[in-house]
Image (cartoon, rainbow, N blue to C red):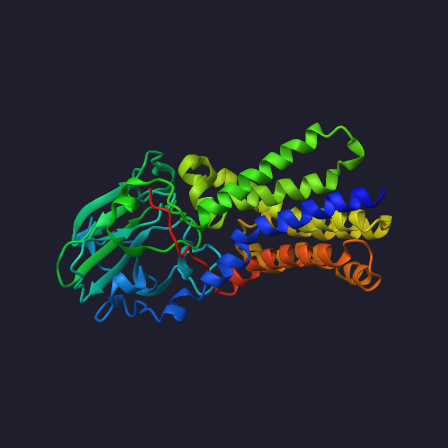
Length: 398
């Protein structure tokens, strides 16, 4: 294994790190979008838009405190409105791992309610409602304006609609607007998406792939797949690395599912937002730290000790078992602990990388930089669990 091999793998690792940005640096920067732009947030189930200009802000995320009616469809079942609403923070409560939630959003049903106050925009405005990947109904001032699937309070009777759903809705020209989203038992939204208000525009309404950061990263992602395909056609098979292949596949699956690029790809391949694919990505992500550990050992030309390798594999399996038995309430309580255990193998090579940098090994600094970028990307999972939820700041409208 010579410098040529090391340089080849280094180049691919740097490329993987750069193309991982859709779920690393870019999403994390978007977490503070409302704070940086000083946008108003919903409070006590109402969003006050007085003094807000869409010309200046470009878009308004409908995040903040929505009212949630547990086991109640407040529009469909108007004569049975007996439940007391509770305040739920959006989009935090649209994540099944959200802390403080009093219900299981994956297998429960109810209604989300928000009153948009002092709506005084002269131009036509549309509300973009993310595809929740479940059966749901959207009401504006009591009128049904969009729906997906067959609603039912029995989880076994819920049917998801795979057809295109009208996700962008024109808002009526009136002072106060009442928005209600009724969700079904198998409600599972795309994590971290939030409804937004944007100015109506032909480019939004008629273009499936808008020119955004997502489209730029989509081009990079396609380039990554092309390079991945070239691995099978290199004449010198000594350049091929099975460990690099595992890292490449795992990162590619994650990129295709999450963030801006995932939203773009899902327009072309709706299956990416399916529950089986989501579970598959979760499993492969659990094994990514283990693959990264093996790859760093190989690229730094360091021997693998059998006992340490078995210990690292055991840590990964503990995380996998935590995911496998997540259906049990006692296990789900410690889900983050299991994930952190499986994350440990990704931290073990840090000392080896530091030694490589100090000894000025070939490409040592670049390898370490690329590796820490990937570590930062995996840390997004920790941030989301702590409540720092991420939403897209430039949604791609269907």
